[in-house]
Amino acid sequence: MSNKNFQTEENEILSVEDEKVRLMLSDLKRVEAPKDFDFRLKARIARGAPERQKTGWFPLLRYVAPLCLAIIVLAVLVINGLYSVDQISAPPLAANRALPPIENINSASAAQPKEQFVADDANPPPPSFENTANASKKETRVFPKDSELAANIEKPKTEKPKMENNGGGSRDSAVANANPLLPNGFTPNKFNQVKDVLLIIGIDAAFSDNKWKVKSVAENSKAANAGVKTDDVIEAIDGSALASETIPAKKSYSGKLTIARGAEKLEIKLQNK
Amino acid sequence: MALDKIEIASAEVSKSFVPAEKLSDHQLIEATKQGDETAFAEIVNRYRNPITNYLYRFLNDYEEAVDLAQETFVRVYFAIERYHTEYAFSTYIYRIATNLAISEIRKRKRRKLISLTGLLQFAGEESKDFQPPDEKPLPDAQLLGDEKSRTIARAIETLPDKYRAPIVLRDVEGKTYEEIARILELGLGTTKSRISRARGLLKEKLKHYF
Image (cartoon, rainbow over all chains, first blue to last red; front, side, top):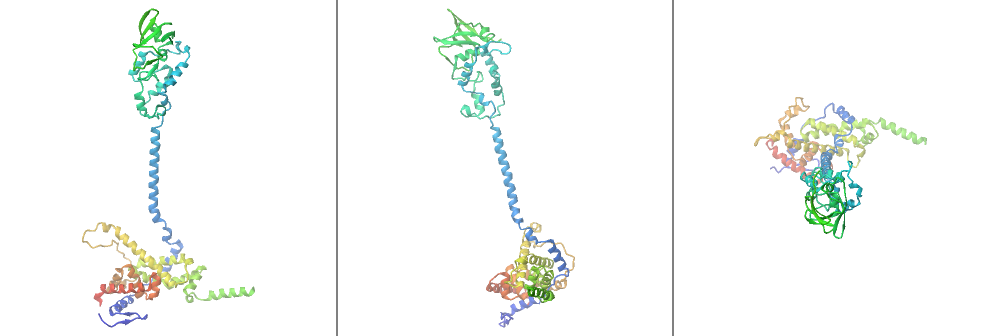
């Protein structure tokens, strides 16, 4: 390293090596702009603002646009998923009517006029217990008086109705717990109204003095065909004594009636037509 | 009233008769703001060669230097309303050129980072930029033929950005420390230390010429 220093125009004191570097750089041949510089510059100015200003939003859009697109796709998927769930859980129109409260059935049955049991071609008589049992073997319930309910039960099990009136639970559990052998309202492990049971087989009876006395028998009904007559006293059904207005509900009935006709007692079995 | 009109008219006549070459940079800028295209042409005429030379020494790429020099003037033209005369115009235009050059260097680094040549490069192999050969004769072909000049240019190119700009402005363009500090928006002491450090780095790179 030499001790000799150089002083520049700005009183800058440089070492020999620094001065050599400075001279090497300053001695580089200067480069000039090309001859068509002005022409090309005018063309660029005529094109408009610099590219930097045109693409100022590009870095933002590069990240924001895909993010927005992803959010929209996710939102659509979520919305579609929610709607599909709602469609699956949508209640069928008559599902709640499949298992109405017993009180409704009883009141509806009691409100039916006696003329309804007058048999004719237009209004066939109610089914017998055997018919009900046979129908239950096919896992279908056909009630001429309430065909809508039967149609509802025959719907596919894939439908999942809301069971608001049955205390919650799915439709599958409701159908499984329902008695497939009896009309609606005749639930096993509960008591059925004797009057309703007798009405189903075509007997209009009145309960007095702890006895069920036949007031009338519908023509062409199971009871009429089996020989039940007016003023007969129905003492038991399938061995269950009728000592009150209710009878323990059973899964199925064989249709055997114990009748007191005056002094004699008869065992009558209902038959299919 | 009539005297005012005469004075305005005489001022316009005198202004129109002053050749653009004799106007200062600030006067030319004001004339450009008024829509005088010849004034901007004079600005271009004054600074196209210094800016091109500065960018060429900064980037060591003539075509890129010319392109960025034109971009510099385009930006000056479209931002001329925002120019304030608190600094010299040369400071303003060199600052724009420096910023463009630094941006270009960063773009080169990104391109180099994601280039396929980098992905396909084997271990131990020297990194090379894949560029097709340019058959066009360069205006400074004679300069590139000079081995020493080419070595110096490569040495400058290898300097970090923060050292490259001040040393080129100082030793190539001959700017004062104060002006360099204003161009680079640095303190005077920082500017001097960076120039000194740049010279030290160049001494190591060019030591076989001493």
